[in-house]
Length: 394
Image (cartoon, rainbow, N blue to C red; front, side, top):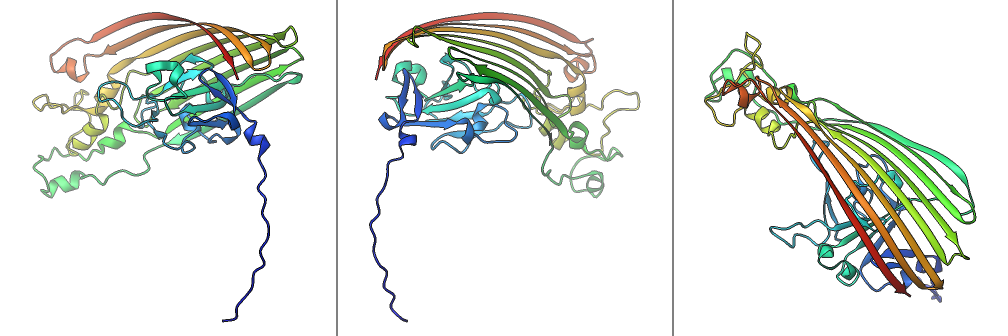
C-alpha cells in the first residue's frame, strides 16, 4: 500500500443563535431555549408527524426521548396511551398532566390541526409549579393564533382513509371440524364468524382555519369535523370542534387581553369491542354453527358460559353516547418592564353527557332469561372553574 498524507485544518464551531433564542413554554411562563437547564423538549408544528393523526399524542410520536405512546385497538373510541416516566403507580394514574393553553385538558381537547407547539416537561424541577399533579410529567399544548399585522387567511385541510385487519389468523373452518380435528359437533354449516362482524372501515377529517390581525389585535377561528368507523360493525366515533381566539394589546404592549372559546360535540355508538369481547367470541365459536336459526333467531347456546353470538351482541345493542363541552378562558397579562410579567387567568369548563342504550329481547342476556328488553337513559352535567394569578421575572 502507498501511504497518503492528509493535511490538517482549523475547525471553528459557531453558535446557532436562532436555536438558542427560540422561546419554549414552561410551567410558569416562557424562556429562551438557551437559558433552560431542566429536561424540556419542545416540538413545533413544522416538526409534527404528518398524515392521519387522531390526537395530540400522535403528532409527537417518536420525537421525544423517554415518551412512550401506544395506539388504541380497532375501536375508534380508544385513545392513545401515553407514558412519560414509566409506570410509577400500581393503583393510581400514570398519565402525564396535559395543559391546553394553560388549562387542564386531555390529548383530544383540541383538534391536532389547531396545535402550534407541544412542550414536554420531563423532570421534577420543570413541573414543580404543578405539585403532585405533575408527578407523571407535564405536556403543554399551545394552540394556533393570529399574527400581528397579517392579512386574513383561510386554509382547509382534510383526508380520508380506510382501515381493515392487516392479517388474520388461519382459523379452523367447517371442513376441519368435519375431519374430526376437534371435539366440536358438526352442525352442517361453514361460518366465518370474524368476517361476519368486521368490515373495511372508512374515516374522514375536515378542518377550516381562519386567522389574521392588525397592529394591536389578532384573531383566529378553527372548525374541525371528524368521523372514524371501527373495523367492528356499528362502532364509530364522531367529533366536531370549534374554537375562537382573540388577543389585544394596549398601552404600548404593556397590557395584553386574551379570550378563547372552545366548543366540542362528541358522539359514539354503544358498542365497546373490548368490553364485549367481540374478537374472542368470533374465534371460539364453532364454525359449523349458523349465525341465525331457521326461525330467524340468533344461534345461541345458553348452557355454555361466556359463549355468545357476536353478531347478536352488535346488532341487538342499540343507542348512542353524546358529550357536549363548552370552555371559556380569559386572561389579562401586565408587563410593566421587559421580563417581568404578571398574569391573571380565569377559565370555566362545562360538560353535558347524554347516554341512551337499549338491549332488545334478542340480546343474549335478555333472550337467556326470556326478558322483553332493557332500556336506560342517563344525563350528567358538571362545571369546573379555575383562577390563576402568577408573576414571573426572567
